[in-house]
Length: 319
Image (cartoon, rainbow, N blue to C red; front, side, top):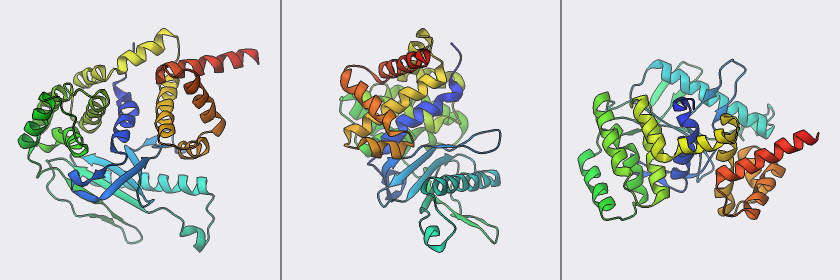
């Protein structure tokens, strides 16, 4: 099987995004930010490459928040965020069919650019760019002041006592490796944190914690250790199921991720047309997946994806 280390954000970010839904970022020093839902993060461009951002969320007030983290911060990063925001607005205009009028310009979304800085960075001027015709401002969160050992011991005690973690404790655990300075120190703490997270009794919390740690520590942990984390999450097992059925990994993975997202939104009471609008897919496709879920309630997302893909192949064969 080919290495899927490069794709870790394709999968783990979806787990991590779900972790943040209905939660406040107060633990990161941003009590005014509360996540309502997540948005698709593929931002296609005319260029040869595809621009991807880490996390795009809908907040409770209807505004959007782009959330990322940095352990270094240069002018290249500033320009990167300018590009992200431009693509987000471009897609919004296309989807909402906004015309070039004052009334329609007022419909552009309010965007928050939230950057969580690791302990290597003490303070950054929120006004990160001013080139005359354009200004860019961030809402920074700093991890330098977090008491790493105290947080680790507190969570360790709860896990030893087989207690479920609170929302804030789960978010603290996820970000813990970034609360120390230096790459080697982060790597070492990431390993200790992963081992700690592996002891969480609640399976959903355990996967969310491991996925979040991998998401945030992606830039500072080595590939071999990242692979071990993915194995703990069970990604390689999922990939193997698809390979055994002869299904191309990228397409199958996308189907399973989509099904998982639809399942969660159905449980929250979203109607098919609402899910289709949020996920930017055909409503008939949502209904087809919903029917499969209803007919095969014991099936996992992987198994539903396999059924869906087999059905599509059969339809193509008939044609």
